[in-house]
Image 1 (spheres, one colour):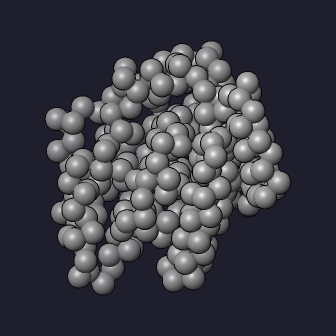
Image 2: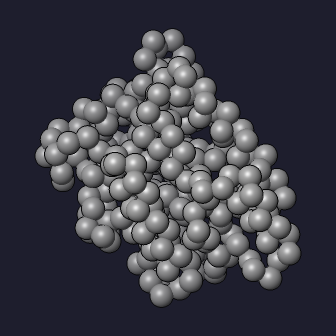
Length: 264
């Protein structure tokens, strides 16, 4: 892995069912396919990112729960995946109790930032991608406190802007109190169906409201994207040629361009 401070990107939306974990897995995989050393941190108690990268629940003896409670280091939690250059710190259902566990800790919002900063030089990736839970808990706050930028998946549906406005308020609060470096990397429209008039209206509304923050690439509704996690594989390994995989490759090309413009 590379020396220096990793670039930390949180994949977040407080609304569920928007393709967040699919985006986290396939963005991390596409970055790794470009030769970047990538660590995916699973902060969702459901552990879907871990399952989607083939990590069996029985093999998660050390997890992000242990990292946040300081009973293990991040290095001790990291596991290799089938994807070259991509590793993961898996999640377990123990994370459900983290708000209570950390309620009296003065550094409760900074545990993940400390863990990433504590990675030894020879174990530091270029990118850390965090899969956040679909709610504003101490887990999400830890992710945003540790991140440089947020990648926000947004489903092409009627209530899309509602979830986005909540997230933007949260970003403003975290910037003010915990992490002035935090910024919105971009918004990616997911589950897009060109035949659906409502989807096209949502796309138009989001682009009109959020402007250049919205990526040009949109992630289509795609059966192969939905199937891949049940095989413990990212879509890019399961079916590289499917429309979903190709969309994520284009998305990461845009993401890298934005990284360069940010001076990262």
